[in-house]
Structure formats: C-alpha cells, structure tokens
Image 1 (cartoon, rainbow, N blue to C red):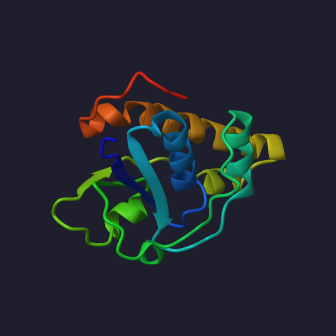
Image 2 (cartoon, rainbow, N blue to C red; image 1 turned 90 degrees about the vertical axis):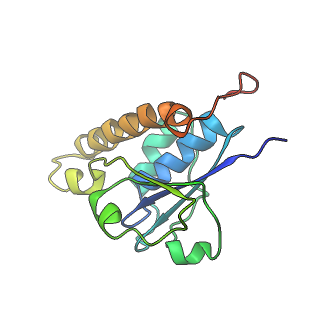
Length: 152
C-alpha cells in the first residue's frame, strides 16, 4: 500500500469549514489522502454544516470538534489553514510539513444576519461548494497523482 498524504485542515473553531474539508477529502481522496481537521479553539460541530454536507451525500455527523493539541504527536505532510485567524495563529509544525493557506468565508458569521433558515443555509451551501472545488484540486496542489481505482 502506498503512503497516504496526511493532511490537516485547520480553522479557528473546527466546527464548520475544516469539518467540511475533512469530509470532502474522505469522500474524494480516501485512497491517497488521510484527512484530519482541528481548530485553534474547539467550538463543537456546527449542525448546519452537518446538514449541508448530508445534502450532497456526505455524513460528517460522526466527526468531532477538536483542538490541534488534542491530536498529540500526529505528524502531517501538509497543513491547510482555511481562515485568516488560523493562518495568523497557526502553531509551529516541523519543517518537513508543508503549510498552505486557502481562506473561505465563515458560514456562521454570514448566516448571523439571515432572515430564515433557508437563507442561512444558502451561505453554508456556497462555502461548502467552494471548499469542494478546492478539495477536488488538492492532489494537484500537493503534487500527488490520483488513483483511478475506487474513486468515490
């Protein structure tokens, strides 16, 4: 078996964007990328993130919000920060770890002014789809050839 690339998606609270990225990565690249997610803080899994991921057939309800410290001594090939705060406060990783930044809007913040649940979910769906588009390019970004066998 080939070595899977270990990727950590890092965000402020590990409640939404990083959870979506982890779930999407599991779906599309489970054969070449071993995804993890964590936050600078721990805010709990966002129920709207779970809902919009379920809409596209991805169940992240079993994932849990955690901090980088809770990952202990895990080693990563790449860390992707998904928000400005995580990028600015990214913990130190060994020199061999590639650190990338690809910021996305914060769905809970965008949804704060929503006039209905559907209006709130619209923000989550847009960010989910933007993260999905990014995740689909991840093997190229990491310099990895996707396998044609067993792609979700």
